Length: 359
Image (cartoon, rainbow, N blue to C red; front, side):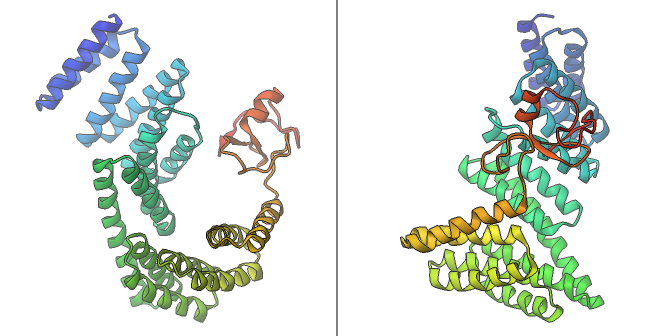
């Protein structure tokens, strides 16, 4: 079966599928897989089969075709096809409640820079990751992923993606509310504080600052009571973002200063990085160059203190949007550096790198 005939048969299957003749459509597409030697055509028909089985609830079959699609994408050696196939693999595992695998495959998608399809599929990757985090009850990470997906939807005028994200946010809100109810029944103060923080972040992301502030206050009260200083930092970070949204920059800086003191007390570098970034944006908008330079310097000092450097080129990881590779020995390098080095063992400890993982 040639390229033109393959394309015609795929289109025929789509027409049958859209007219609710699902089994006939599947039969046509399976014939294409059996007879076509056109790799691009095979990739496309595998995508159709993945989508059809997903909509029919046949998730094991969906996963089977997603795995075959990955192999086809690798034969094509095309980053766009690889991104699409890894997303289908992530979705398949999400449907089968293999949430850790879903997160891993989504991270692989996000580690494929420079793809033409990235702008269109990035939101769907974030949505799938958010659903997986929600399945794992990692509420804060789920919310962050849903917010990213929503930004993709708004930036690309993707109404369908926006609808799907809103459905997931509805489920997220219900699960957080249920967690809060259980926490109250059992007197679980740490869980109550976390739920209140998540509620506050939801209201802030929706622009409902009047509701967000009291939720942050309640979360801060419990975080202070139980002595969770890192939790207090997260609350103050949210409060600062609320004040920024209201253009009350001095109040935002006051919250950031309190958060910075707490973050330095506990030695949490990631929180310090976030706070210095926020301070930079405020002082830049206020035109205060001396304060701006101080936070830029402190930001880079924090980056150095995290000791996240490529063991080959010595460049700080994160300064550029680069693909990373973690070896079994836990050392991390730029993928390009490892490829240029041409070794199959870790340059630092010389352990074998036969089974790397992507970051």
